[in-house]
Length: 518
Image (tube, rainbow, N blue to C red; front, side, top):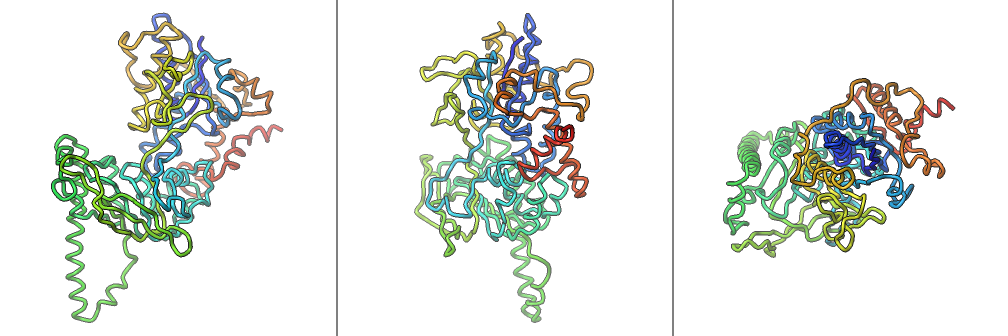
């Protein structure tokens, strides 16, 4: 039997656990694999739980798939333990046949401009973690007293952030957003959000589905300046934008959606102008302006790059200075020397993620990944390190979607089994068909969430951590956290679950049964 530790319980880590059991069972000489999934948080699912926007329930449902992996009899969840704090890399390698690092990418890239550290300037991941109830971020971190916000970046995360900022809080009440965060959203003063891209709309990374959602938000007006949508001339003298639109269906879909908003905005402006003229004639302009609350504004801007975040008299964010950009005829991205400043009181940067180094594990500071060959961790001299592997964003960088991690994990596991269990080398026996591993007949996982928690004794680091007084969170304890969130939702009349709002609350729920037994 192989004993494997997977460090990280997000999609990359759990797809790795699934692939280990599934591939090992199909070897010419089947091998049983015992997988311990370790995570520094007391809760599993990583990005699915703390990165997917709460109003995207279909994407968050991936957790139901991953739950079945955790409930496999040969997979254990060990939460609340951290590599480099509670145990070392060497200690892992002493008790496991192999270790797979799958901790994802947890840090935003910086802009490297003046004013980036002013109060009111944040990494988008901090904001995402806040509204997703991540225990590392205090529920009181954001107050949303800014009326105008700039979101820098044009990927799906930037779109998620903008949508949460302008969406009617009543539409979020049935999601799992922590109650203190909901209170902040209900009292938000945000009325205008600018989403800013350095290049053009054809180069934007968001998906058409995400983009179209913005135009369907009640009470929100979405605009894009006409001249920034142009594919030829203007800001793109190279023709790259037109080539992308011709070759990529996603780009075409995005452009159609944005062109529709632009046309609607032009028509609305003309209608408003006519209405104002009519009102002025009969003296009713003032009365006409006293209708309901003005819609929130979401403005998509392109061909602009941030050059400085300006300081207000109070020492906080007071504006964002931008330079107009373009692609030259030879395809060189450059600034034009034309500047503008938008009046904002908050800036959220969403310009890409970076992985962070793990203690004593090789790390390439340029690519922010663990150097590897097909998932095999490499030494400084380029040689594979025995028993060490990597998967997910830590392996390949922050690319792809959640499902991309499945094929990525399969590649890593194939290398691991080829090294340790006589499995096929790459190019040999085809990998198993993607899909959930077949579970043995009979009940899976803890049969009774209220049963005494004795699962910790079966995993390799149990004795070492017990000697240090460290009591990890098992899958059974996670079920207690989950049950507490479901009960909180019922008490508040808010959907299926509401996340506990602090690390203390999460840990208290995990330890509740043990405290009752004492």
